[in-house]
Length: 165
Image (cartoon, rainbow, N blue to C red):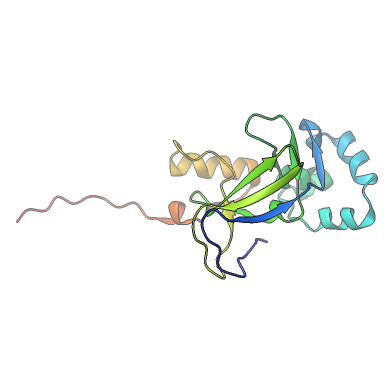
């Protein structure tokens, strides 16, 4: 599951804005909170939540939140789960960035560069700045159970050759 551009998108464009289906501190991963929260969702929102990918299916609804929730702000202890923003997949070289507007209580997606029709919209789930490929792969596997196949992770190692004239 992912999100694909249906029209050209210029760098810096606000692509999407939406309110979360659910918010909470670390509660979004606590069984009692999750059971209570899901039980009180309207049927349509419960179906929407259930349609999200669950990398931890053995954990039922908790796995849905664990797979699809992310921090609301840089240093916030709050997390949110979204209908569309939670479907944006990871890349170590993303073309988009998620932001949280705390005043309006909406998540937004902005393009970091020009995006072509048919291109998948991606964000980085982790801070990749000073991580090796193996460290990124290990972190993503542990936290979301997938192997990254983005262009950065798919590049085969090139050994520099010393040539002389």
